[in-house]
Image (cartoon, rainbow, N blue to C red; front, side, top):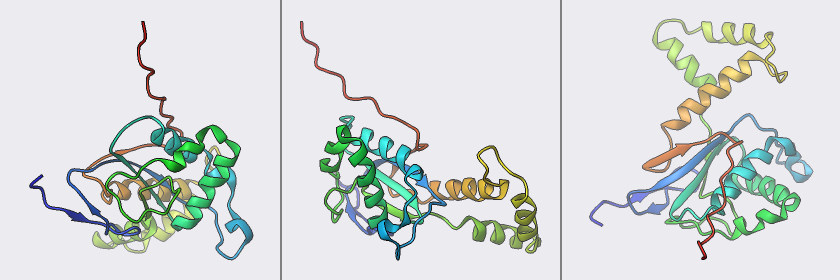
Length: 196
């Protein structure tokens, strides 16, 4: 290939990869974790759907498709959350042995080629408001939206920040061609060979 090599890091796009790259990304933002607590204080239900989605991708037989998650949690916390769910779903254990196409330095057994920091939606909104001369309005708006509950008991402010962060992550994908998915996406297993 005559295409130039790109450089990407584990946390900030510094791995050497051949062009073009294809991958699937998820955003798992606003998660609960504490590095100083046993088991990192993980809340299991926050990670279950993501585990199923990435594990079924890796087991689907799609060759050369990378995986990426945007989150506040560091890689070792994400990997711990994924292993906790694999213990509950032993049929997905093989996903931890799946190859990482074109990515060097991925920890053994990790389900993700990249674990990247999710965007800071609050700062993005504040910067946009400042740019149009409405700098103080973001805090007032978020305070007002905090009192409005959404269907799952989170606030509208939380939903706004989560969705804004997801949109900003679209621009930071580590692949040339990227499919962004919701956590609840499930990949079908590869088709069985036809036998007569």
